View 1 (tube, one colour):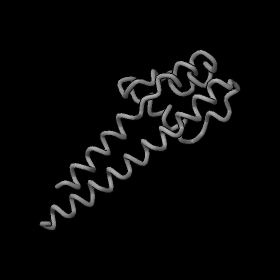
View 2 (cartoon, one colour):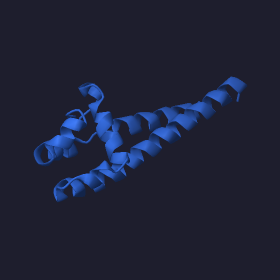
View 3 (cartoon, one colour):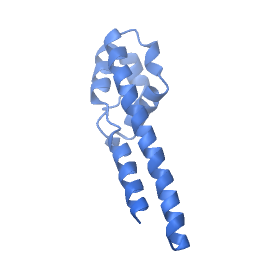
View 4 (cartoon, helix red, strand yellow):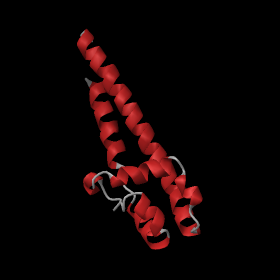
Length: 108
């Protein structure tokens, strides 16, 4: 059961760390075309109909390399590290949930 609890915590922590309001604001100010392509994300949460997920995916795929603004690029390089960490937290959380569920079903 501890494995299930740890997996749930890591998964929730990974999901909650997908927040990029500074990137969204910089994109809207300096590269509005790219900001509109991403769906005009607010960058705060999933309440903007998943547009923050498009920003998250764009960061993971290093789409910021095509931006002309150096300020956006420098912000995105730091945010890329945060996005990769969130990805790994979610992956480890899911693995722990699967392993913990298997162990709970097996009676351990």
